[in-house]
Length: 262
Ligand code: 0L1
Ligand code: MG
Image (cartoon, rainbow, N blue to C red; front, side, top):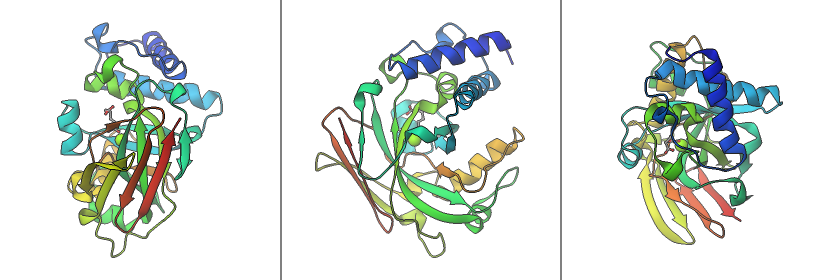
C-alpha cells in the first residue's frame, strides 16, 4: 500500500461526502497518482465502515465493468467490485429522487442470491450454479461521484464503483434449466428502445461474473455470503437518465423492472 491510514480515512470521508451532498469532485488519482489497488479497495472499505457505523445495512455485492459494452464505454480493462447499500435498494415500480444524485445512469443486470457462501480460489460457473438459490432481474442506477463521469479504475474502485441505487424485479427463478447465456434483455426509456443485450454479454455467462467475484474476494480472505444480492454487472451500456424519465427493462423469463425518476 502507498497511502497511510490517515489519508485513506480522509479520502473515504471526501468521497462519501460527495455522495451524500450529490456534488461531483475531481478524481482522487489527480492528487494521489501513486495510490495502488489495495489503497483503492481500502478507501472503499472505509466508506463501507463509515456507513456501517451509522447503521446502514450492506445488502449485497456488485461486479462492475463486466461487459464489452461497459468496457468500451468507460475505456477500462478489468472487472471491479463494490457493495450495495441496503437503504438504496428498491422494488420494481420505484420512484427515484434525482435530487439526491449527480448524473445518474441505468444499466440492466442479472442478480444472483446464493444458498451458501462462496470464496475462491478456483470458484467456477458450475459451483456458482449449484449454489444459486435464485436469479432475479435487477437494474443498477450508477452515479459516479467524479466530475463528468471521468475516472480511472483506482478512482472508481475507491468510489464504490459508482454504486448509487438498485431496483430489483419481483420474479425469483431457480437457475436449473434457465438459459442465462441466451437470456434476452431490452431496455426502454420513455417507451423508446435504448439498448439490447443478452446474458452472455456479462463475461460470457452471468454465473462466471459471480465466480470471478468469489475469486477476487477469496484473494482478500473474504467470501460472498449466502442470502445477499449479487449484481453481476451491466449487460448493457449505461444510459443517462434525468427527472421525468421512465425506464422499463424487460428480461426474458425473469419479468420486468420499472422505475420512474422525479
Ligand atoms: O456497475 C458498474 O459497472 C459501474 C462500474 C464503474 C464504472 C461506471 O461508473 O460505469
Ligand atoms: Mg453495474
